[in-house]
Amino acid sequence: MITLYVPRDTTAVSLGADDVAISLARAAEAKGIDLHIVRNGSRGLFWLEPLVEVETDQGRIAYGPVMPEDVPALLDAGILEGAAGHRLHLGLTEEIPYLKNQQRLTFARAGITDPVSIDDYRAHGGFKGLEVALAKTRQQIVDEVKTSGLRGRGGAAFPAGIKWQTVLDANPRSDDNESANSRYSGQKFIVCNADEGDSGTFADRLVMEADPYMLIEGMAIAGLAVGAETGYIYLRSEYPLAQVILNDAIARAEAAGYLGDNILSSGKAFHLEVRLGAGAYICGEETSLLDSLEGKRGQVRVKPPLPALKGAFGQPTVVNNVLTLAAVPSIMAEGGRAYADYGMGRSRGTLPFQLTGNLERGGVVELAFGITLRELLYDYGGGSASGRPIRAVQVGGPLGAYMPESQWDTPLDYEAFADIGAVVGHGGIVAFDDTVDMLEQARFAMEFCAVESCGKCTPCRIGSTRGVEVIDRIRLNENRDANLTLLNDLCDTLEYGSLCAMGGMTPNPVRSALHYFPDDFARTTASPTTEER
Image (cartoon, rainbow, N blue to C red; front, side, top):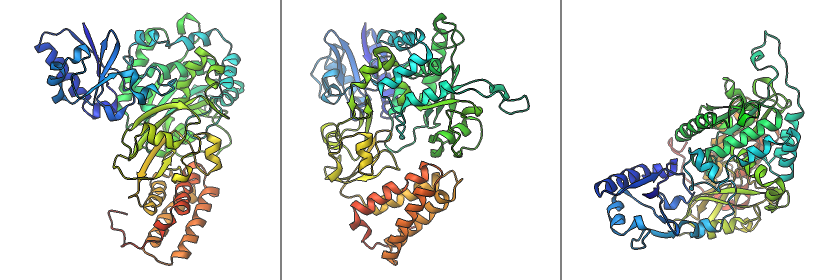
């Protein structure tokens, strides 16, 4: 039997992977060929999707990007034998430079396995970390995470081991029977923040769609570490395929004894459930997420108390994002020291950087901290898709600074970026060529904040709205100097007066645009149209 791999993740499907799989199956049937098609996850080389691979004695041979109309010619050219006679032939998948030069820990299995096959997962080292954790004490598990140097991959970069230690040491509350949260008395929780809403980010989604058991395993280990028997994956509603794959994987993991009341006959329990978000960016903030998880409107909570002490349903809660929890199985299986051997300074391990925007080769690039932005943009991204010079790059989502070329040789490291007023965040990288108007980008940042604010605090709710108005006056050359001063004052108010990072970080893109691209704020343009507003 011949085995072909055709990805089933959102990106590949959006580019026609389902139609390619159907065309291959029909063509093989018509020719009487015994063909087995595995719907794997993407390798993360998105500019080559749909990427079709064939299993050969030499290894997997890749072809891409394949369209349904390419199937007859590919079959005639010998795709089923891995022949090189077609223009879409790429050679051995593992030898494609974009993939070969990465350091894949989190994405070690992505694109290799059937995402919902437990046998595939185990054959590639899956659940080894959970088995190691079951033989350790809670404190030993937490200590291993501390040794690894793993920090939260959601933006704040808080040490995961310290957060876990806080929850381990916390005493769950025992509410009286009159309390709305009385059913949760004495419990602790693990909550995965899968509300991936930053522009240019998709690594969380790819983990969930290409290797869901890694996240399930990481959450189970976290539960063992802090004494939590219940976990929730708070998934953004815009990821319907991830929801289907996660629910399928969770059901299979329960049936196989990796979740439930008696994990691998250890007497220890962990239950996992997917909860859908409601399309609000603010629910990526951990306390707003918890309110939404509890069925309330997603609004930021005042801290303290911290979620580690009073989180979901008023109980001690670990809140980590997908990439953080997905790193845990490797840490437990190979040891915290092996993970810490990657990276630089206090930024240990690897981070999946996500290349988007005006780039020739978009996709996931997992590397140790320390690579530069310039290397990512050109060695992996291939420069701009338009062929024009890249002018600005935003790293870390819509609240990250716009970085000029003079900063592109800064190592991608949390502290190094903080020193220049930038953020690494979730690793999203969006490139703009020299046609970009940075005044418009600054305006977008303020407008984004105005639209996505939870509305709880005045600086964020009102300040962002006033910010849009002030930038519009600058664009129309109305009292330019006075309005530039006012814009800077508004940024100060947002930074120092907002309740959370939504308002507090909105000044980052605005100030960087003002500082590094001042010419764009000196041009006079026509009045913005209703559509622009």
